Length: 73
Image 1 (cartoon, rainbow, N blue to C red):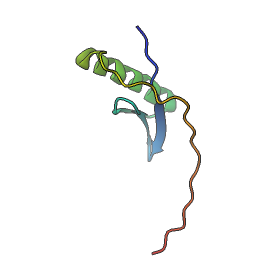
Image 2 (image 1 turned 120 degrees about the vertical axis):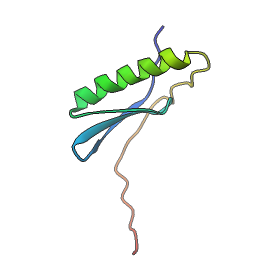
Image 3 (image 1 turned 90 degrees about the vertical axis):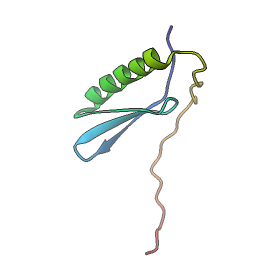
């Protein structure tokens, strides 16, 4: 069985942090590639632990863009 999930990787100081949107699983790595590998492993472990029944559907197309907002203060 295979499933599709949405992964987002962000840079936080010296780490890349990967988030699986549908499952709430998070992992990290020193490189983007390492964060991807670690997130995949974390998702696989999550699915082994909690099963694959009632998995949320992939949210589909994801559009990311920089959002700039003026903040007074």
